[in-house]
Each structure stands twice: as structure tokens, then as C-alpha cells.
Image (tube, rainbow over all chains, first blue to last red; front, side):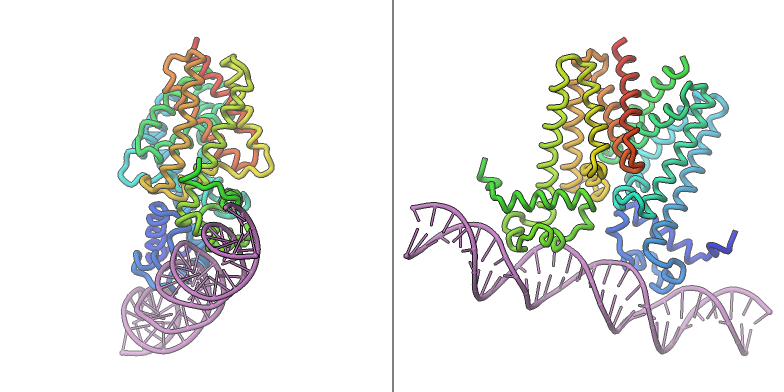
Length: 192
Length: 192
DNA sequence: AAGAAAATAGACAGAACTGTCTATTTCGTG
DNA sequence: CACGAAATAGACAGTTCTGTCTATTTTCTT
């Protein structure tokens, strides 16, 4: 790995800082100057690594996409081979996320909202992540022997995204349990 | 009606224009000057009617809240007295909304994203709307004879909000059908 | 028709925004 | 040590942002 994104420590530090601030306050509201002051990095360093703020945001989203997918995959793998347990692992993971101190909603959903034009690169990148998670869900429900895997996975996606929204708005992790119960009902209905 | 919000035509026109632009492009990205140019109104007129941009946004949200609730209530009422039909009416209404030309996602969900701090007045106002819709759903599922009305209504809320997100991101009205099918399954399971 | 209320245009302040540029210093490696 | 690359501080341009102020004109009511 290397040609596309030379692994520079400054670059990594900028990405990490951008990620934290964008997640905490929003993509549009966080300015370049704020970000640079927080990171303790000069402006030209940023613009040597990223062509624009938009490219920085895209890099943040790509990084988060890879990380979230890895974490979710790991959580499922750690649950063993039983589809039922794997299922529960998804919602346990969700609950743990909701209860973490720095939970502030979903970075991808926020990107979709802040860049509402469907053709915007940021909008598209965020949606690609949601689609990747959906693909993961399709695999899961297929293993569980559900009758119409894509339909069920779509419904689970609705529940999960809805739960993230509610958890953020209420500051409670209860939506994880609501989603889990509803998902279990749907799964039972699709396998019985 | 009158003391709090004197019914002025200029004020109404400003509200309507603000609503359209905020919905199309976002609350933060639309500036006061843009809004004024679009409305053809002087700056001081705006600031005579609203103390700040934030208060304008709050007024927009309140107005939309009342309107959306009225539309949803009307759609349910027009479906007659059968709880099953009332249920379907909710998702039909959702589908119709998704298929309308100017569908750009949910103004309230976007407000929640653009103002992520839970204590922010705009965040709170948007969430109040979602809670009001939830209350409406509780009444619906209670009439339908579901066993745990609040739990079921919560799950339906997740499905609905998730569907709005997906419909916006994909530009398809299919999520309405996905949500409808899942909701029917959950309802059947809660009444059987 | 006269006086009060509302709306107008537009300048203005003060801050924040992205991105560019220059000149200097630090750093890593041969 | 020496050389080239990377990072630095900070000024700068040009735009945009919210909100204030003034002086003038329009509109409504009596």
C-alpha cells in the first residue's frame, strides 16, 4: 500500500483530528482553521496532503467506512457460527456504541443530511457505506435461512438506521433493544 | 391568535421561502442574504419579524410540524375506522411523499443532523415533532389491539425514519413498501 | 388628507470561510 | 555534514456570513 496515499504521520494525525471534530460538530460547521489549530499543524501541510476540504472529508469517510465494517465483521465473527447469536451480536454492538461516551449519532447519516444532493461525492461515499453494511446483513440473514434475504436485510437496515437516529436524539440506548426485538420477530417470521 | 405572532403577509411569505430553501439545501448552507433575495424582501423586515436566523428556523420547524401532523392525521382519518386500513394509509402516505417531485428527505431529521447537540433548541424542536408522530402511532396500534402499544409504536417509528433516510439516499420509493411489509408482520405478531 | 406603522435599499461592522503564497526552519537520509 | 524534502508561521485575497443602522418610501387607518 502506498502510491495513492503515502503513509505520513502528519496526514494520519490530520485525518484523526478531522474525524473527531467533524463527528462532534458537523462537516460544514468545522472550519479549516479550527481543525488546524486543534491538530497543531500548518495550513500548507494540510493542503499538501489533501486537495481541498471536500477531499479531506471524503478521506475521513473512507477511513471510517473501513473501520466500522471491520468492527462489525469482528463482532459478528466473535459471536461464533450460530446465525441467531450472530444476529444478537449486531444489536449488542449497536447497544455498546449507543452507550459509549462519545456517541453522537452516525457520521454517515450526518453526511447524507449535510450534503443532500444525491450526486454529491460526499453523499455518494456515505451511501456506499450503508450499502456495504446492507450487503453484510444479506449474508447474515442468508446464513440464518431466511426466505427473502434481501427484503429482510433491507428491513433490518431500516430498523438499524432508525435506531441510530433515535438513540442520538434521545441520548438513550433503548432503541437498540427495540430494534433487536423487532428484528427477532421479523427473522422468526421469515424462517418459520 | 395574534399577540405572539401577528399574522403578517410578509412574515408568512418569509416563512414559506425559508421553508422551501432550507428544505432544498439545508439550514446552515442557506444564508440570510440568499433567502432575502429569493423572497424579495428587505433585511430589516426579516429582523423585525424574527429575532435571529435561529428563531426563523424554529418558526419554520413549528409550522412544518403542525402541517405534517395535520396531513398524517387526515390521511389516517380518510382511511375509515378499520385499524388495518388506517395502518396502510400511513405507509401509502409515506410512499406518496417519497414519490413527490420535491422530496428531499425529512426536514426534521436534517435538523437533528445539522444541530447535533441534544440541548440545542432546533434539535429539541425537531425531536418534539418525531415524538408527536410517535404518540399518533401509539394511538393507532392501540386501536388495532396490539399487546404492547408503545413498544410496537417505537419499532414502527424506527422503520418509518429508516425508510425516509433510504428513500432520500436512493431516490426510490421502495423503502415505503419494505417498511410497510415489516410493519404488517410486526403488527400481526403483536395481535395474533 | 394626515399621521402612524411597516417596508424599503443599501451601507456597514466584525467575524469566519477556503485556499494561495512566501520565506524560513526543521527533519531524515545518504 | 550536507542536501533535499517536508513542515512551519503568518500574511493575504476574496468571498460570505449574521446582524445593525439610517434615511427614505410605501402602505394602512382614521
